[in-house]
Length: 208
Image 1 (cartoon, rainbow, N blue to C red):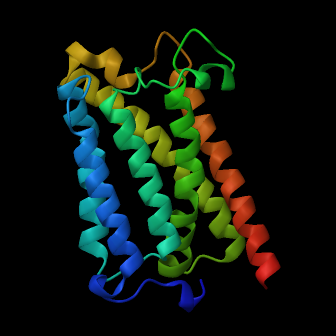
Image 2: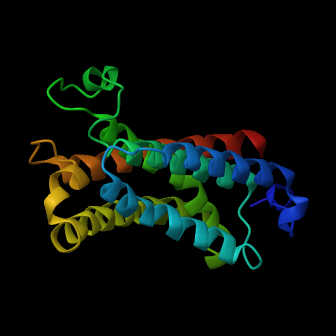
Image 3: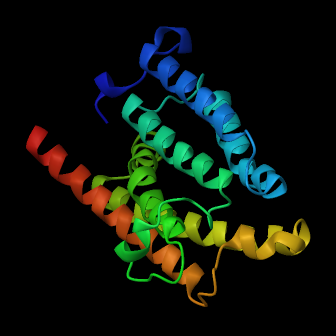
């Protein structure tokens, strides 16, 4: 990782990150107004609160590049938007045809694809800078980490639906009648991460 890509040591010196934080807070507040399923919305926001605490709590000791923060911002905005509509009622019907099925709303598929696309580079950056993983292995371990995170999230959905919210389990898990929902979601995250890392590899080769 090139040192000039690192964010400033202090948050108040990092104007782009300040703007990103303000944009997300404003967007979150807007999406907090009249969600489709209020209880589901609170559960979905567990991920938001955990991510915010991790990013803020570790900034003093570890700083991503602003590119990684921007990618995380886009993913969190997508998740926040989806949580407002409980994923299954997002008003974007054109995505149905994009993923080959018109009998379900496929916005959750789109978000899982972007999970791999948007989180691959931050994970790759984390591995390169903290674990000292060599370049080739960093790409492979990043893909494995995305797969592991995607699988864990599917398990987390199941546990929460069974223990905390069985009455809204179907809305929270969002299978929409597809018995292969979990496997397809994980596969899309895999494809997204491979594509993002391929772009990362090509850009680094061009720059070097």
